Length: 471
Image (tube, rainbow, N blue to C red; front, top):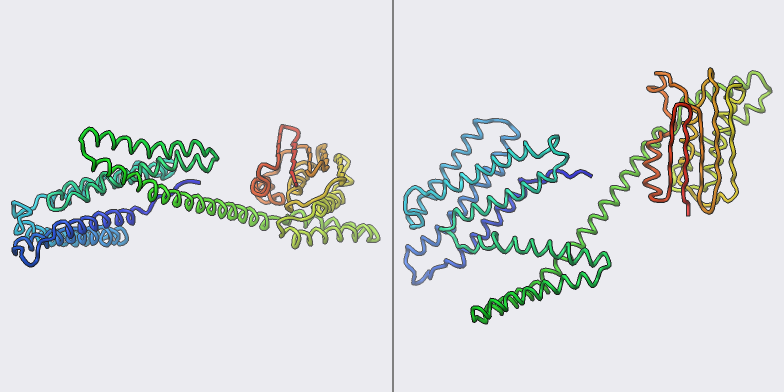
């Protein structure tokens, strides 16, 4: 299944929102002045640290989430340029006034604002280049594009945090530059070395990687603690180890279990959709009108030259086949005997049509001994239909040889027919019952690893061997 492009506009909004929320919280709690004893300048500086990031975020939201999507929809270039310029000028003046009067900037012209705008523009250009270079049809699917775009997005977020570092607390940069990548690396380690080994049954190996990492973490902090003669370093390492053991790894295991569960549901739904598609194709083409018309014409001709006994028998067989196609083949499984009975009716009708042809040699052997159990309907008949459609020529010598037997809970069909050049009209107007490609798909869906299908064709013969394990 080919990967699809992620919804990067939503991901970008989420990452930027998380970054600005982190900036706001760090500034709120770590720069809080004493409102009772602090000076007015300190309070104004504190408020500026909150309002400037809010202004930048609002500007980003207006441009990225409203104006750009509107431009992509309406294609009104000048409207988008004018509105973007208005947002930029308004936010610039707000940031410039607050930064200068709060002494967060030494100049009335805040250079960090231009840096932020430049980073955003460079990101848009980079995203556009990636979209042109790493998406289909240049690349097979979106997997590489998604990975590179996510890395680009995260890298530009770090550049933005570095750019505004002097007006905010460095805690946000530490979180995005060290904590989140560290958690990601530990999560990947846990998934590939601990979780994967565990679900594969390699419990000892899983435990070795799990406790080995925790022990190595403690050892590293113990060595640094001894080298610096600081007990607090070891205590910090102990706290990180407890966090990994009791929070991060159990939470990661829960997420991975949910992921595997959802993946299993997706695979199940995909299977059901594929099966439904195959069944739909099957239902659309299960009745071959060409065959039915020929059968009816043959029955009509027989009725004119005989008393009607043979005609009645043919009509009864045709009615049995119609009832089978309307009722029984709607089921997932039917008795194998009913499938064979349908096959016999089909063969009898075809022999009623072609039985007197002197150039046709037909050898049919059907052994119903040991043919018990159930089978998915209409899996045998398509190959026989194909043989009668392509294996008979009224002008050349033709042959069809069929052998059907059951052995130890399995059914085996061997079919050989002669090959004749098709008329051009047959390619466009005539089709066998459901088509060999559709049968192959149904076999893969219903009997995965429980069937064998060999098809060999040369200039004179078409050979089919089909084995299905029913139990």
